[in-house]
Length: 417
Image 1: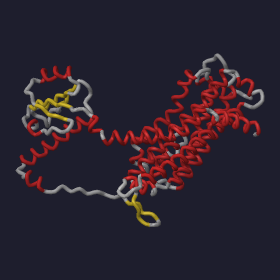
Image 2 (image 1 turned 120 degrees about the horizontal axis):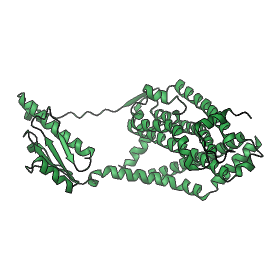
Image 3 (image 1 turned 30 degrees about the vertical axis):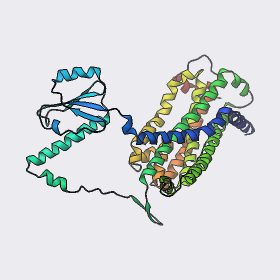
């Protein structure tokens, strides 16, 4: 145990003394704040960033062309050209499109031609206007007075989602909860990759420099691997702790500076204060730690099996695939249905739980038995992967000049002491 502690101390002290570590502690929070502000600014002014798109309309039905309305960034024109001539004009202008509306547009598809792929926004706007015109034509064909319908005020009903708790009903703040869930998924996905890769690179460096041959003359390979994993994990916890403290301090400073009457910051702080950050943070640290231990053991085994970082790709892809798969699902599907059977199962399976569970927890719908089962399986999964990785690691770190394959890894696993 003493030797493991010495290895942990060496790994931890060596990394936290690096200038890059200290610089990143202070730079990352400002980068995140800057990127958030930039994304907000771009989203707010995205109308001004897009160039005007000209749509040359060839309307064989004579229904739509006179009624299509030009907007700020879309302009409809009728030049009376043939389709061939209109297509020829596309070669010289990337901001020009040709909209072909056939005479029997209900049976024959309407087509939009462009030199490059048209933007989703352009296609959506054209579809929206055509559907509105077509619906109005149907009403007229059925002798329904569209002028009267337009005089009726359209209802604008907004729903405030309320959460019923033991202390009473409160605003659910679905948008803020969704943002926190997606942010947790992104942070834990990046953290597992970054610190797992650090373990793998450390093993490769020691193996290629032959330092490892000297080290294992004094300690067992398992002790060396365990010390390296825990040491790098403590570095990660230190970095996350510093980021959390800096984030809390900076948010309080910003909140105090912009908390005047009528400020939007007051509303943002009020919304964020309803989210149980203490509970989310505790779960985040648990899933980061156990997920890191689970994946870093596999990364260490991969590092021991190769002689250079370029040879790691064949082993890295299968290991990272569950994590990547869950991450893509989390930012596209799971945050929309955090209590779906898919989300529940992904949050229980150890290889996918760190990301999937952190999407679900901010929504507050995780049953206690699901959380307990997921955490228990994370611990069991970590012990299992560490056992498998250690058996490969003890042989791999002494193998040089031999290209490893999956067959070789299986042989190494079954080698006797």
